[in-house]
Image (cartoon, rainbow, N blue to C red; front, side):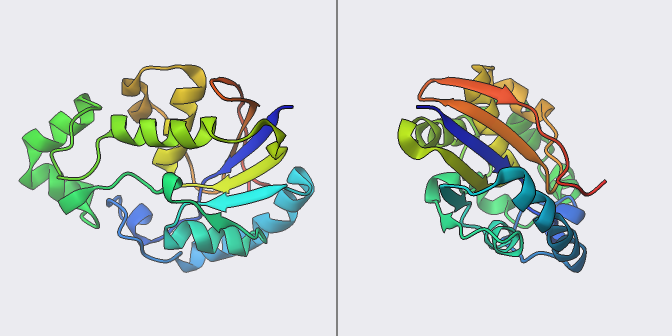
Length: 194
């Protein structure tokens, strides 16, 4: 059997709007409004999901709930642990830790913030992805954008460096089908929002 996995990026929150490393803040008003508007289209497009998961972050759990999904939080789908950069605006980190930020942006194995490297994130997400059982059927997961990037890198066997070249917009879906170590990508689009 084949797993059909739909990865959905969360609606917006303050950190995303401010171009800051996520601080686990809730959805903002615009994010809630857009998620509510997307719910009917998502239900129609996905049909019944056998299983639904979410990153454990507040914004992913709230997005899943607003979309009408009964999602189980999955620790393996947590966003990259950003250590001391958590909640800080990218511009402030760039101004205060230019060399460290440059290292993080150029080396997927670097974790100058004291958290998790992008390579470690990819390994964690790949293990979750490959751990989905072939009889899982349809699976939906609301996941942080960096988690979606990591899943796509794994599915495509792309180099870690490609992660920072992928743009994952809020409330978009990407579909993968397959099973452990053999995934196919079907690039998705907005959830009836544009």
